[in-house]
Image (cartoon, helix red, strand yellow):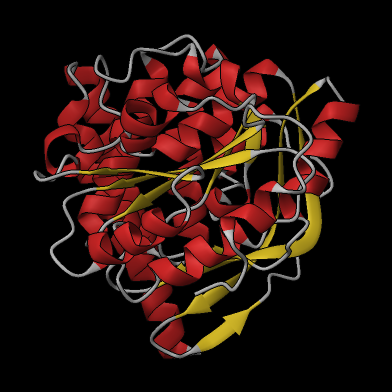
Length: 325
């Protein structure tokens, strides 16, 4: 546990109301939650921040650990302890349902209970940037990736120069950025239709909302760690479930005006083309099977069936060529 006291943290603050609300989701994170909370409490800021934790009825010692921190930092740490797992009911949107509505801060930072920050000035730097650049709706930074099974860190070597709405829609370039985000809370909190739609990838949609309301900044310096392990929601899902969730999310975007008309159907072809070029024919075929189910017209299903045959033919051709060469 961090050695700083609540009094020491608060002594640096120049006003009373939180400027940043740190929103954290936890579920069975007893092995990780302490490192995560410590990384929040180590932040050196001139402004107040609050830590909003939503624990989704953990069955391990996660809640016990959070309560220990809450006793020591009662003015900063504000948890919700669920007794019934809400994820099983709502499927997604835990932050928008339980943390964002009670967030006081002008800005919201997100970090899940199995990830953590590494830079004690992360929040100060991000807030300073958004305060000085009001045309921006959000700022992100690079994260190291920690692979739990291999006990290895990996730092992505790609340099992101510009993030556009199209890049977020097409490529989900901010896919591993949950623990790096700081965004203007108002732009997200005014969307109140989380109960109206099924949105499998809540974070992805939040980034889209940010991009619709301003520019997106990306800092290529590493300030956090994103943990990949088999208990994670995405990594523990089978391939068919992952593809089905992708389709559900794109159908949601298609039904909602945030998706430009030119991007709607193109996503599906782009996804299939990408998987085919990567020789991931199995994924492409599963995708097509799921996509055919949601096509209502005979013509639409026939077009997809012909595409299905084409991909199968290409897969067989590549297999035979690999044997001959």
